[in-house]
Structure formats: structure tokens, C-alpha cells
Amino acid sequence: MDPQFTHVRILLGIVLGLAITTLLKGMARFVQHPGRERIYWVHLGWAISVFVLLAHFWWWEFRLIHLHPWSFTAYAFLIAYVVVLFLLCTLLFPDDIGDYRGWQDYFLSRRQWFFGIMALSFLIDFIDTAIKGREYFDSMGAEYPVRNAVYVVLCLVAMRTRSEWFHRGFVVFGLAYELSWIYRLYDFVE
Image (cartoon, rainbow, N blue to C red; front, side):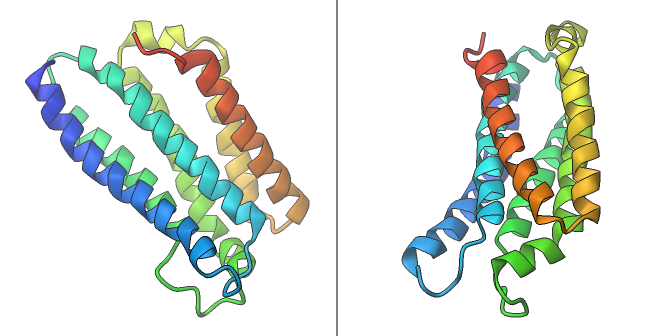
């Protein structure tokens, strides 16, 4: 394995590990103290969805092994990308929600930040995919840019609306589609 790639992957793994830890600790709160805080299933659905996104990120970033030579710009970009994903996790599970009436109130009040950062992550994904090379970008097919554009638009709508039906539909669609996307494109890494 390329020593440069190993070196890059270590820092990405640390930040990604902190993001996953934030999610798992946040979800464990519901198990540790089941009566203390009422679960808002849309919030929990996004926590599960972001966990899948993080696992997916770690899986497909393995393709960076083929990137030669490494530049500091590419390295800094990937660190920024994983920091954006970490921010999604910290928005889902802050240290304290005492200023809110519960998880639903918290989630809906922070939705502009959460969905704004999520939209940013899908825009960053275009650049990340381009870093892997034109051949890789083209291998994603026509669905890839449409997928990212639709996610960005849905995130922009989610930032503006408090509609319960929209947020329920978006989290169910998002999780189901992401699992389908991973299975169809990334079941095996070459």
C-alpha cells in the first residue's frame, strides 16, 4: 500500500472516528435513559442515515489509493470534506438540548444548519469525485449528478419548511435511496 495514502487515511480516519463516536454516543443516550428524552423518529432517522453516509464515505474513499501523486490541496480538501461530515453529527447530537422542548423542537430549530451543511456535503462530493479522475466520474453514470442535484434541492426545501410530512418523507426517501445507491454502485471496491 502507498505510504502517502496510508498517511492521508490516518487523519481522515481520526476525524471520521470522532463523527461516528458522536453519533453512537448520541443514539446510546436513548438506550441508557429511555424515559428521560422523547425520541423524535425523524431526527433518529437522520442519525441512522448519516451513519450510513459515514460508512459509505469510508468505503468509497478507499479508491483514493489510486491517486498519485498526492498534493496538499487534495489532502486539505478531503480533510475539509470529513470535517463537514463531522459537523453534521455534532448538529444531530449536541452536548445539551436543555434550551429546547425535546428532540423534535431541537431538530426543527437547527434544520437550516443541518440541511445547509448536508447540501454542502453533496456539492463537495462532486469535487471529491472529480479528484478520483475523469474515468471514475464518468463511471458513476448520468444518475450521479442528478442524484446530487436532487439532494441539494431537497435540502434547500428542508431548510425552509417545518412540514412534518416533508421531513418524514425526506428521511425515509434519503435512507432508502442511499442504501440502494451503495448496494448498486459500491458493493465491491476494485
